[in-house]
Length: 140
Image 1: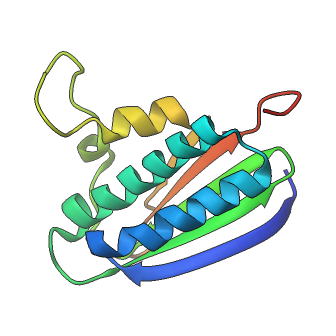
Image 2 (image 1 turned 90 degrees about the vertical axis):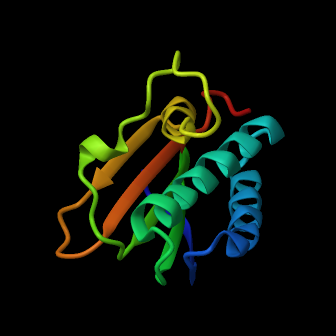
């Protein structure tokens, strides 16, 4: 997986700034050759990851989100980085699907959409969430 193109966005960790992020994810995924339906799933998954940072990481406090989009030979990689107080992996577990109520399904959707999900808390501060989606064999 050799990277061909990299885009980096930094923005305040506020929901009103996610529109530009969604537009860049959409543009990058289309450029990589993903079909429109797959692109919309990728946009939603990355948006969910960033909303989780805003709601559960920063919890309303000021902060930034950095999104790095890497075009791969066979897909696309998204890295969401924050400097929010670290949460444990147990806090990143989705609630049971049979627990019917609004919200809380973002982690399920992210895992169902992406081919690889890695939650890195090895840095002294913050978290890096890496999401990878492979292009279907033979293109889409």
